[in-house]
Each structure stands twice: as structure tokens, then as C-alpha cells.
Length: 450
Ligand SMILES: O=C[C@H](O)[C@H](O)COP(=O)(O)O
Ligand SMILES: C=C(OP(=O)(O)O)C(=O)O
Ligand SMILES: [Mn+2]
Picture 1 (cartoon, protein in one colour):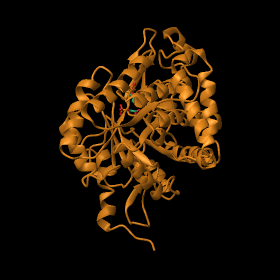
Picture 2 (cartoon, protein in one colour):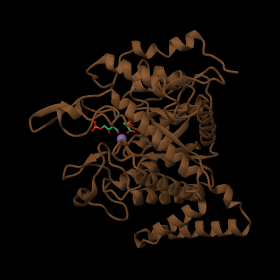
Picture 3 (tube, helix red, strand yellow):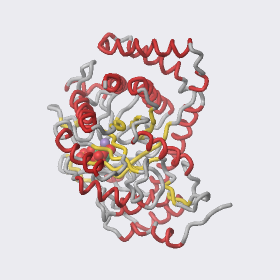
Picture 4 (cartoon, protein in one colour):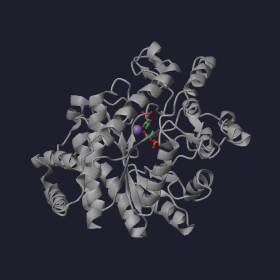
């Protein structure tokens, strides 16, 4: 039997249209946007309500310290790079990290990609000037193209449909890889041994040997490795483009409730989390698990007000705070937020984004981050939670499975001159494959030792 939504619920889903927009593209022709979204609204869902419910349950476990979250992927996915090789490398990196973290935490790892829909970016400025020419800024492949020409930079709403199709093909591959045997733990373990073969990572040898021994123990004890051939890898992106997110919001026939079917998990960015804004309004009305980014200027009052709006029933797993304070601020700002939530009996999953508070410009002019600073914020996040006796629920990172050079440092010591070798990101710098694994080993050591 199919349950329908009430007229109030359907009307509420349009309320965002009356609220002040932020970070939305200046589409040249609003009628064109209406045509695009009317078509989009008839497309099949990319994800199913039951899957989002499962993820909400997993995130509730993470809030309670019974699981650990790993959310990772590009700052901005691009259409050109949503190829089989790139997607496979990214999935492999996430699976490798998850295996190491599972050992370190002795907990199941909830895996989410910034993948299959991460095509829209909030920006600091609306316009970009080069050599005296000023054009609209690049806002992600769902909006415009990166080349610096008036044609490319003009927002084109038909790109929203391309974003849908690219998300669908990416998700198809994610499902094929993760349910088709590619995620086999024995295989993932072999890849990690390959990583450890590089002497640059000798300091993680003790941990790597422990994992090796644990695998041999499991085999000897008759563990069912065939049951470990499949994993869930959930999709997520920033819910930024209201026209798209609204068109992808559908009524679940089992419950009559709205779900955003563009991804399992949606987050609201630091720039669009205003309580009276359209992003908070639209997302408050869907049942998916939600995230909100919290930067260094966040107060406990802000965070509580967001929880009142987005999780009024204090349902575990519904709300994740992704804190991105910066390495220099996390130890000072995070405790006040966590303490208030604990004192008020609020449930939230605390996840650390050590990327966005630590962005710098290198002497040669690249937008970059220092690996050591990124790691320092992660350490600060754990120190705060351990001191308060609260639960550090997971990590949110910008990464790629490829051998790019966008973040400084790491054991392979990418330096300023080295950034030029393979700097490919169109927005923020990502950890490369090796830096991602190094972070996983570092965090796993910390988790094991706690
Ligand atoms: O990914 C995050 C933001 O979109 C990005 O950091 C904004 O970058 P900008 O300051 O270059 O606009
Ligand atoms: C835009 C992003 O982050 P924030 O909203 O935290 O700045 C992002 O995650 O790419
Ligand atoms: Mn980013």
C-alpha cells in the first residue's frame, strides 16, 4: 500500500522559495530552470529511503561510540573525471582507510563518499578577475565550466541534469564495486601491504604488523571472509543548489514522508546554515540523515538552535555536526559546543573535518594545506572528546585516489615546488592516495592507544 503525503507537507516543501537565497547561481533565464527541474522531478530516485534509514541507524551507532564514520572524496567532483579509473581509485582509498580504522577503533566503520553528486560549490566571491577581465566564479560542474571564458562561466541550468546523470553512473559503479567483490577485506589488506612496502611509512610498521596478525588469526579461527566481500558505501554531498535538491525530493511510499533522493546523506555548508535560510528550511523537512558544518565562529547557542530546527525530536543519527575549526582553534572552540550538548542531553554525531579550517596559499600561489596541520586538527578533535569523555564520531576529508600533489607534506614530503607537478583540483586541495592512507594509520594508532 502506498501512503501519500499530506497537503501541509507538500506545501511546506516549497517554503524555501520564500526565503532569502544564498550562494545560488545567477541563472540567466528562470524559465529555463523551471523546465529543467520539472523534468528532473520525473527522473527516478538515485537512492532509496530505506538506504537512508539504514545510514541514519549507522550514524546513531557512531554517536554512541559503537561505530566510527569515514566520509571522504573530492572537494568538487567533475564530469570529466567521473571515469571508471578515478572512481575505482577513490573507492579503493576509502576502503583501505576504513580497514585500518576498523582495526584501530575496534569498531565498524560507516563509509560515506563525497561522491555521486558533489558537483556544486559555495564560493567566497561571486566574480573572478584575471588580467582585467571579470567573469562569474566557477561554482561546480552542476552550474558552469571552469575555463575562463564568458560562455563557460555563464550558469547553465541544463548542467543540473548532467549532474543527475553523472551521479547515477557514478553510483552505479559504486554499487558494482562495493557489492561485487572489489571490497573483499583480504584484497583490501593486500593493497595496504603494498602501501607499507614503501620505506617512507616505516613508522607505521608496528601497526601494520598487528593488522597482519589479526588477519591471520581471523583466518585460523575460521572467520567467514566471504561474508566480508561486500560493504555499504553511502553517497553524500553538500545540499547547496536548492532547485536541484528540491526537484530530487520525493515522497516515500512506505511512510508518506519526504526524502531527498539525490544522496543518502546531505550536509549544509558553513556559508548556508542560517536558521532562517532556505537550506535549513528545505532540509528540515526531509527524513535523510543530515550534516551541518560548524566553523570556528560557531557558538553553542547556534549549534543548539540548529539542532532544534533539524532534529527537534533528538533522534540519534539524524544530525551530524562536521566541525572545521582549524588546528589553531579546535582545542579552544570545540569544548564549549560539546559540553553544552552533553549538559542538555542532546544527541549528535561529532565528525572532524580537518581540511576547511586549514587552507593556506603557498609562496608560489597554490591554494593548499599542510598535512601536519590537518593531522593536528584531528588530534585536537580527539583530545577534546577524550578530555570530556564524549565520543569522537568520525572524520570528513577531501581526498582522491590518485597521486596528485595538492597538499604539502606527508612522509613523501610534497613541497611548494612539488605542488606544480600534479595539481589538478578545481577548488580545494585534496589528500592524495598516500596521504589519505597515512592519515588513516595515524588516526588508527591514536584510536588503538586510547
Ligand atoms: O570547498 C569549500 C569552498 O567551496 C571553498 O573553500 C571556497 O573557496 P573560495 O574561498 O576559493 O571561494
Ligand atoms: C564548502 C565546504 O566546506 P565548508 O562549508 O565547511 O566551508 C566543503 O566541504 O567543500
Ligand atoms: Mn572544499
